[in-house]
Amino acid sequence: MSTLTDVRLPGTLRLGLSRGWLEIRSFTREWESVIFTFALPALILTMFASIFDGLFDMGMPAVDHYLPGLFAMGLMSVSFQTLGAGIATERDQGGLRRLRGTPMPPAAYFIGKTVLVFFLAAGQAVLLLGVSALVFDATMPGSAADWLTVAWVLVLGTIACSLLGIAVSSLARTAQAASTIVVVPFLVLQFTSGVFVPVAVLPDWVLTFASLFPLLWMAQGMRAAFHPDAMAAFEPSGAWDLHLVALALGAWCVVGLVLVLLTFRWKTRKDG
Image (tube, rainbow, N blue to C red):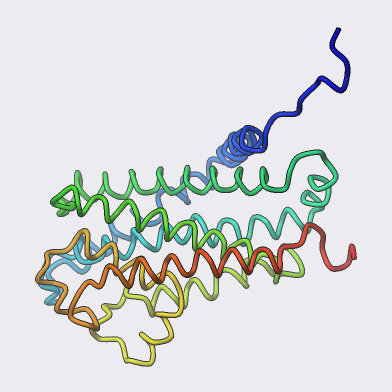
């Protein structure tokens, strides 16, 4: 006969995947958030491609010029911004404290968040690339190596920004404060990392500042995959420097993990 001691709890990975499915279901119940999250980069690209095409000498159609940066911006949005604000809200409302009191391993919670982020990243990427190619006839990566670059930049960049979002969530004292703490630096980085403004016209001190964060490297990696090789001449070093992109994003994955381990809290400060 089986006894209570024979009952084995599900493993951490299985619990994490189940938690991820719960996170996805919870997120998709609010259709307004789903539409806005998936469509934001595609909407911005549609406006830029319609307004700026032929207005400036970009050396290529406006849609091709802005697509890589907006791709990178979208990845940071669904990772850094979503987790930074979302986890702070869960903490403020007591959700994290209740979860910590359950038998669920802490790692399963973070696996669940990872599943949610990559679900959002995949949906957003499919919509952005679909609109770019089908509506504006944008130039897609021309080789398997270029698509591989898209893949590893997406994975490393999303992991790095997710870890930063989790760490930043601990800075917010309340759920209301979380949006400001997350949105303001994200907005600044969009204008300093080559998303909206070409890196070729940014001052050196701005590039130095932006190079301390993942978004500049994510945008550079995406440009290497989407833009012709000749466009590398407009990069700060005159080359795509994919080895530096990989090194910077890999370093931020390590730094982000350390920050999470040092700063993450399951309770608010008022809870002790």
